[in-house]
Length: 529
Image (cartoon, rainbow, N blue to C red; front, side, top):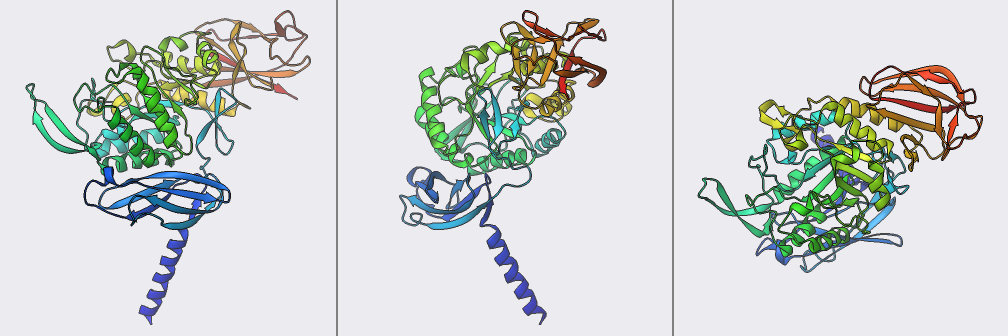
């Protein structure tokens, strides 16, 4: 009798498991897995994909070979309801396979992929606001497992919701270790005259284990609510592996394979390159070809950018959803960050403004105060900034390259600013970008954030720009924010907007407030009933 009961329970569990696999949340990942040919070179000789349909909606997704005779097609449903699929392939075993699944509403922290909103800002697909507070971890997925796990634990307790990360390993100062996995199958290796090893690759065969590991880490980030800003190419190879000089044909094969594997991950952003102009093996004209290859291979149109070294790329081109800029000077003072935004008319993310740390290089020794102020300068201007840290850490690791633990003083202050921005009724814009670079406001003019930076003053007379200013008699309360000590002091006074005087709006009684004589203060001004 017991054996019969166990058999029934087993059958029930199996049925429930099979049924559960057919229920996919909106923006989650559905996967078709098929067994096919292993002989020859499936990477080169076999093509596979599928068309997914939901009523009149049809989406084609490319598949890929995952090794050991396994072929996969991944799909991210963006519409609830029943989806049907049919595979297409040049191999009879894989062609014409059909199936279906049900897409159900998203739950919990699943807000979908991030999209551009209101010209200069971002929202998740479900409409929830997203403010990018990023950090830099170029080669964190090429480190020993223990260090990667420490990095994830660090991110769990940090304020960052975007990570810039390279697909290819990095060979650069302070990060010259060999990874455990490589993107291509190794044909052999030989010692060079300097004693270092020169690897030889079979560029017609990808290493599925390498990409599976990358995917796991992107999923780990998703579980923490973090977007993966995936850097497809970079110049930090120096001929060590040769991944920066594969040639256009191999580059395009790599793009096709990478996008087939990763496009269905809702937290993926595409960064065509880090410092594209420093990759001397790729002509400038090729970047248009590579960018279009990425965009055309991604049926979900994830966010896409290209990052510069010294020379900006043509960021106004339609394939780029936002602008990723390296330029520390843009957030060193007032009035600079907004200028590039007004050139490109897209969301502006200053992804490299130098790093907090103590490296001797000029880009690697910002103080915590300088890194924190860079974020405030960006946010006040209606733009966004990415963090990085270059202090030497336990085990001779540096967070910006290898990950590990954060020891700098800016992350807590960045988290403090992130909370302030998320509590605002909407994204910030300079209230008067032509003349007042200290004052930001929201679209309804009910909320202002004024940042003083390094300037210290004993008194502040209530005043706001006339442009985008409040109506007369609107009442406000003011809070004094110490951005470094992370305190917010609510003042008891209520201020009332008077009639405009030239370009400013003062309190009707010209009231002022006393300020502590400290740098890095801000004011939060909110309308009250």
